[in-house]
Image 1 (cartoon, one colour):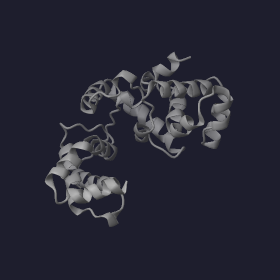
Image 2 (cartoon, helix red, strand yellow):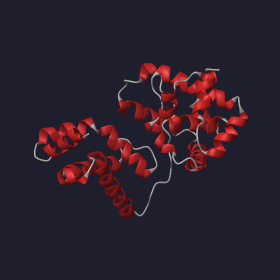
Image 3 (spheres, one colour):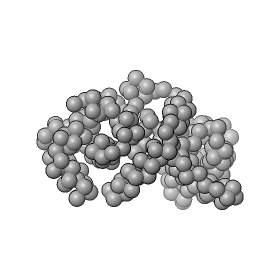
Amino acid sequence: MREFDSLAVNAKTDPAVQEKLIKQNESYILKCASKVCHHYITKSDDEWSISLYAFSQAIESYNLDKGNFLKFAELVIKRRLIDYAKSQKKYNSEVLVDPILFDVPPEEEDEDVQIRMAVAEQVSKKDKGDLRLEIEAVNHIFSTYGFSFFDLSECSPHAGKTKKACAKAVNYALQNPILINDIRTAKQLPLKIIEKNTNVPRKILERHRKYIIAAIEILSNEYPNLADYLRYIREER
């Protein structure tokens, strides 16, 4: 990671390196912006331009003493977007969910991220009022486990084999209400029990713990819009 941080330092005095660094981290910049604004940001939004400029500012003011560069850049982006929101005297509370957050077919994993984002935004506009309410409700539940809805983008499985393994773990829990009750009481995923009864590797359960818990909560409650994005799990039964 320090090698990447050193690259950020070099980008300060080398326009070519800076341009390359920005290009390689466009999806990260968009993710940071979406996280701050609580709705999906694309390159057509003003927030994208502000975030891009903030990322450039982060490069200009960064040094190794400031720690991890990407964390530092995220902080700069957050500050600039908050300033922008205040200047506009508004803050968009509308939440748009990326349908590929949960369900990315293996054959589409290498698809251009910007195309996927554009499609996701259009799809998510359908019934967005009901969807927003579902996200707000389930996000409150997720908070009791120590994570948020927007954290799922970092722990969702993408490879077909991993998705099947996670689906197996989720379905096992859904077929055992007592286990779900234990999960909600302890606020933890019983890794040993699930591994023993499903043969899903512990490493996968640990890596995708948040995703599995989220899927269990969504599919065991009344969240029809969000459940639709997890339909592949039901199909694995």
